[in-house]
Each structure stands twice: as C-alpha cells, then as structure tokens.
Image (cartoon, rainbow, N blue to C red; front, side):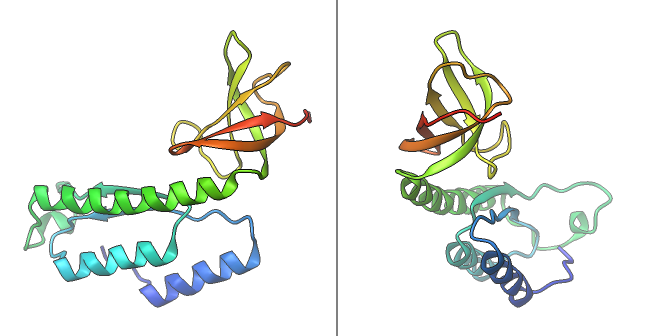
Length: 171
C-alpha cells in the first residue's frame, strides 16, 4: 500500500509508546486481500497482530476503487480468501480482547456515562473506547447522568463489553 515505514520501525514505535505510558491504548485498522498479497505475507501480518496484541483492531477486505494505484495492480486476491483472512485476524483479535477484558475484573476505571435507561442502568465507556465503535461498560447505580465521569469497579465481562459497579461520582 505504498507505506513509507517498515515493520521494524512500527515495532520500535509501539515499544516506545508502551514504555512511555502504562495507560497507552494502541489501535489500528488493517486491510487484507490487497492485490499481490500472498499467503506468506498474510501469515506475517497474522504473526505481527499476535505479537503486538493491539488494544483495538479493525480489519477490512480490500475493494478496488477506481482511480487508485491498487485498482490496477495484478494478482487480485479472490474475495472469499480475503474474507477468510479477515475472519482469521478478527478471531485472533477477539481472543486478545477477551483476555484483556478478563484482566480488568477487579480493577477500577473511570467511565464516562453515555446513556441512562428508565431503570437507572447506565452505559458508558473508558478513555480507551470510541463511542459506537468499541466496548461499553454497563453500570447499575443511581443519580447517573450522561456526561458524568464515574469511578467504576469492573466486575464481569460480556464478551467485548464490561459490567461494573459504581464506586462514587465525580463531576
């Protein structure tokens, strides 16, 4: 994809970020099935994802867009292979995400409340999570209002999402 950086430089940057901040969240988006992508190159990408254990990862299949350099490249990857590769990476990332979520049980995280239902149950997210994209934290409590930042003890997981108990309210 004509990137001007190699794997070594990316790995060095990731190490620097992680060593500079314990709370750093690293997210990326990948495209599989770019014309010319071999099985060997895909396996290298899969190994890279496994080694780096990204906090958040999105994977998409390449689709030709008229007027781009890649649209004219030879050796197109069949769509069914691109989908298999996407599924393989997302399955790997799911394992990473679930392990990270399980490690959060018993820890306290600040959660910004996004919505509260009629029963007082709130849905929020941590600083690491984008609204409508990443995991949510479900909290039972009282006097919760959207926009409030609350310390929440993580008590359980729901796959990608978390459950927590309200510890107090900050404004």
